[in-house]
Length: 48
Image (cartoon, rainbow, N blue to C red; front, top):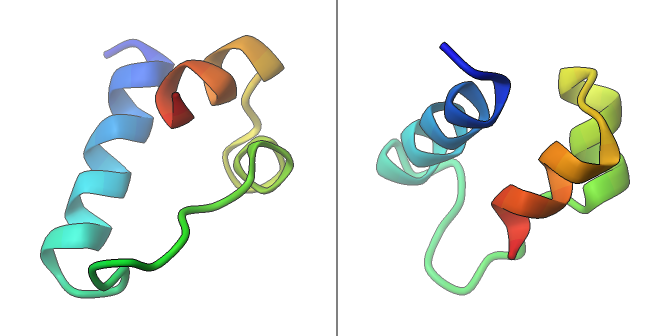
């Protein structure tokens, strides 16, 4: 599974489980890079 798809699934699960509530800010691009070991382009693509 591509890294961007893995990131999508992880963030979607966190939203479904309530870890991120409506109106919460998602992780910054830098935090996504640190937590998931992603490149800038992958991190930016999923936060846009």
